[in-house]
Amino acid sequence: MNARIVTALSIAMLMPEPAFAQSLDGRYSGASSIAGGTGQCWGNAPAEGVVSGGTVTIRYVTYDGTQSPIAATLGKDGSFSATQAIKSGSISYTGRVTGKRITATWKGPECYGTLDLGR
Image (cartoon, rainbow, N blue to C red; front, side, top):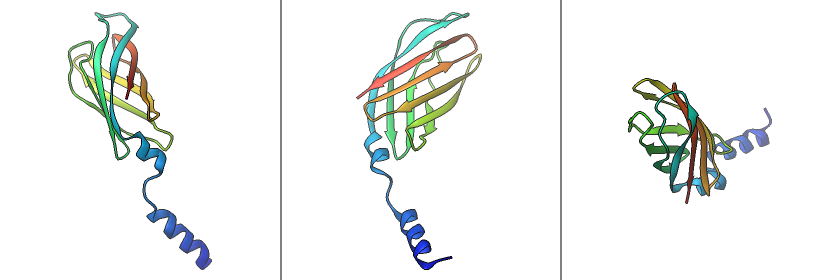
């Protein structure tokens, strides 16, 4: 392999986290909202999120009372997906962090909805 290519690859691997990823770090707050479902689905629940070092952690009380946090690794574009165990199964999340907002859709066994958190 050409010495210049090896050097360029070595430098690229040592470069710090991209500015975009660093700009996502911080605290976010907002709510989880129920969009519908077949079970006992109740309204909005306050939610908080923290982004740090390429990971997003979101805390709120789910529709069945589960309080465990959701944690996911961010993709290069700020996207994430996660699964959270709840009493009746699990909730799947798909979302994105933009630096100003964390938005996601979620779907559980009985209910589905959205997360919307801002700085």
